[in-house]
Length: 337
Length: 254
Image (cartoon, each protein chain N blue to C red):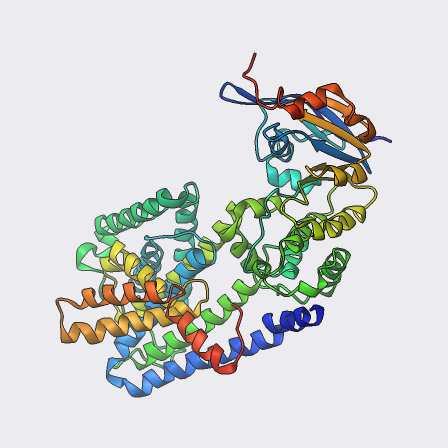
């Protein structure tokens, strides 16, 4: 009996080495899928770049919802903060793309700090309602400050310098797409480190039982606030990427609708794995693109039906299904990384 | 022995109901105290008041000569006032190793680092292994907590508390819900607690109380009705009355 228990324990827990291998494989798959998109859909690179920008937004929701258990319907406030900050900077002469991404990250972090400070005062449903209120306020502020944001006309006239002084952001969107893909990969790797760090563990503990975490001697509020700031940086970079690639920032980038869609993408893909955010975004936006061209009026109905099917049949999201399929293929159960 | 921990006149009213009435007791280092009493006597409320989950209506909590009554639960833990829970509060998706590692890192102030690795610090790993070994949990160290036996989960609760290097440990029914075949393991773990640690244990299992405690305090209707040696408690008239029911209900504030 004892022997059986021991063997099982070794099998049940993936060693650090095998987790490392899983993550390296995961990152290689993301790069491969990204490059495949580049070769297979050369005419749709603008859409694919948009997918990457939204994927960053969905990843940022995963950080606070999937890892900390704080649900939000206002994450586009952080995405929009990054988009407008990069856009306004660009119009005012800061045109270097990497600098614009950093500006987006900083603005997103600041918005995350503000949003976290407000949202973490409440719990549960009240917290969710606060998140909606905040994104609406951001939306209204962006609308009113039309001198800076262009209001409902949008902020246009962004001219971004060539990347590293060499690669122009051309009409075909090749530079923007590859730049976005590289950004996504870097962010993903950094986030993998963060969610596997002591801080990431602490967040997961808070998600399950904040009272236990306090009894371990750790405050909860500063930990969650820190995650809001990190999440804001990620969402802000997504916004900045959207601004750079489309060369325009619209009010839709700071809307409730975008926030809600992004949350739907996360639930579709699966929470708390980072992979789920990517899978959910690609499937949702791919589905949107294909179905809306077939039936432009009822595509959201189809998305609704897909979501219901996923929530009922695979509560862990589509990435959970993929993991189970690949897990059973290798004959062992993988833990969350 | 010199006093390590003291509560003075601890009182808690919920509306008109007094759940703790003027409780005073003190513990030296190395104390082994059992707090017993009928259901609803206010034992867990007392632990909540001492550890800061609840704020008292009146009274003081003093640790190592310092008044900690105004401090929140987290700061009290950091000062060395640590509890376990009557119903285990563990993270079902994490392993025992991860629980204790997280606790040790927290104690060392390293738990909120974002770019260091969770495992891989050999000093921390050594300490974690030592704690798990003392409790006989090495075999299940890398299994998810949701998959291990309840008795092992109770031991892990104690392990987490020990990883905080407490001065005062409050054990809220450490053997509750554990099948009697596993009680000896809990008892063994209690025997191995650091000798200098002051321990207050709430427990219903009287055999365990008599073997563990040097001193017994009986709580009924939110107040202390007996304090003395384990050998004296059974003979005490008030205690017998309490367990028969006269004291078993909280009384309204006079």
